[in-house]
Length: 401
Picture 1 (cartoon, rainbow, N blue to C red):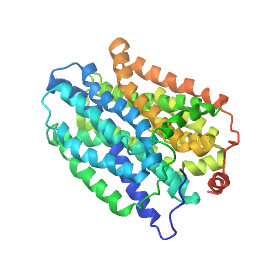
Picture 2: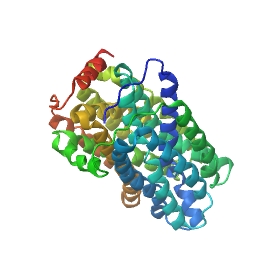
Picture 3: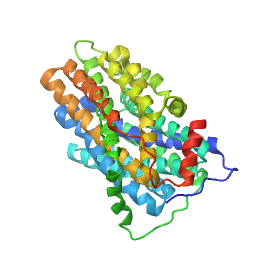
Picture 4: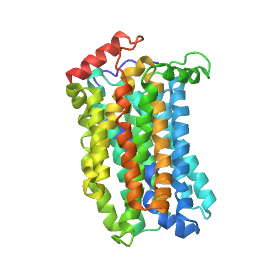
């Protein structure tokens, strides 16, 4: 389904701000429990490895749901899917704060993950289809920035709340945030025009097409690796800084996490870097920065996050270029792989910490990023046969930006 861009009268700045905000608050939910692992373990009398499932259950549901609902948005429309997700989040999120057993916490976090998964693939597809060609690089950059900032904002928010209120208020206060977001999307984001084609299952049958495009499966290796390293880094960092070696408080660690936002400011400008240096070169540069930053640990965390911020929008651009007219499904699968990586990050890092210490965890994560540098060598940028004239015009416009 390809929709016509919005009219010239549309307020793109307002729309960009709303989509950025909603992307930020929805995806922040993935990372809420990273700083709370010790608190959850103490509150529910479980081990740290078990407590990590409060995050991983959300992430696995988020990953699978993102693929499912991303495909369904082809049939039912992007805005309807975004609104459905926000409405469900408004209902489910405050219930999490009232649980008294760990099993219910994990179960409701999984349901919350399914609700949240309706938003990211839908908002990316909406941006690519409904914004004018010359504005698409910018809006995708802002949405990518929101996804990245969410990795830190979610942790800062939950850390701040538990310092001043009880654990439950992390979820109670989000009720108002999601209600406001639902209202903003309802009244200020124009409808897209869904055009159902074929049966209910026909969009799912097209998933197999993404594996027929040379290079796309390789892109998804990088998708997963980036977020295994990113979420694994934050999980290890929090445990490392709170250990007896440093003994930092939650407040101190909150400020260390916040510094990483500086590195994310490069993402909205990634389109210009891609146009000047080429998508694969920017992707390589991002992976190199990330590997170096992670290898040098805390002192270079800004460099690490800058690398991720460079690599992610470039990767989305590369996937869109290769996928052609099936880019909406291709981006949905990218989101699926991203949050599979986000799910595995805490599990892997805690396992490595328990069996080899903090240094081993950092080294393995840095090694994964270094190995991913090899992947772009095997991705050939060829003109997709199915590109329409409008798709070609988009590439030209992106080059001009």
